[in-house]
Image (cartoon, rainbow, N blue to C red):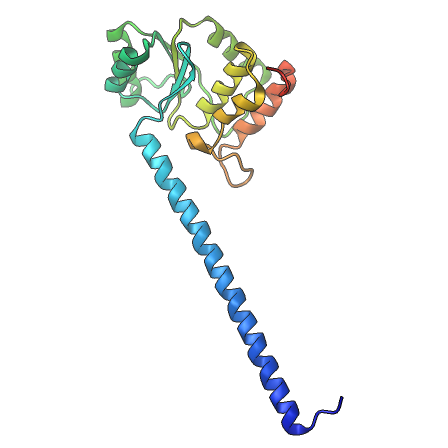
Length: 215
């Protein structure tokens, strides 16, 4: 096909307009994607904030195990009235002299609730020895028991999965929902500073021979 100068100019002009239109559409799509991603982040942040305002309190195994974020004395009292809490396992470890810890200890004593400290880090996997010690503690504390960390999402989620599968014999797929965004946990490597909890669970699966097909 032979293109004369005028026709060639029209052709090039049209091609440029199409290219610019496509580029504009691509930029528009990119912007929309950023807006959507930003909206998801903001929305999840608001959801996590709501969880904290409400104490992130949930039933794990009815009448046996409950989970929450750091409880205030008034919430400890409310949880005891609501579900009869008899023991508390604090996954933040002993912190004498810290306001939140001393208040928790005093509230537990006043209400006759047994209190246990088990130090964990959401950024570090548990060793096999620590895991076995934790399972022993979970088996032997008086029930109902409340397990908590700071936000009630990561360390508490891992312990909830462990209890449901290893101690209560429940299905792994069902149990793993305890370590999910629903409770404020982000199970994504590199993006989540608490992904060590997911890695810890994978190691626990091997240690205890957990099979997701079990019921």
